[in-house]
Length: 110
Image 1 (cartoon, helix red, strand yellow):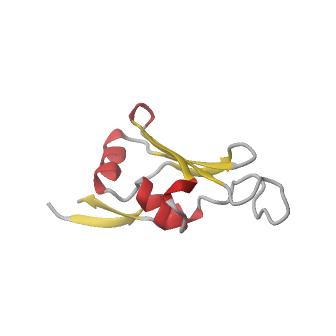
Image 2: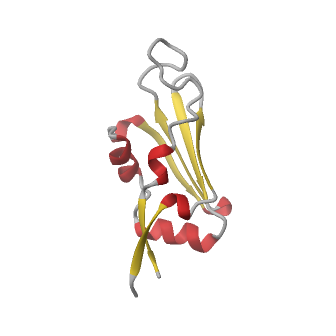
Image 3: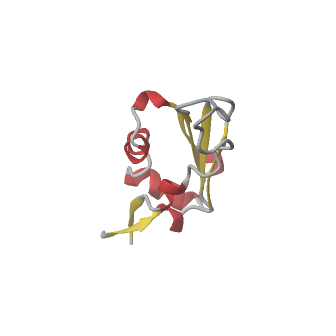
């Protein structure tokens, strides 16, 4: 079986980030079908380690990383560098932090 590489944005129904309190940002990746969710999980492209590498952060900044099959979803939460709304905070609502996930390459079977 051969595989092709596609960006995560072509596979997921929803990719979003949002404020999760004063010191965290949470991310949701939701898939329409279980088969796509399972294929992404099997690919190894979306893991705690790959998220840390993608965002250039240490693993210790990821407070949670959960695969939730009943919703065909992956959710992870990271600690902010500074409190939400404090001087120097670039995104008070955390709503613009998902962009690097859009182009994350995922190898899926053809």
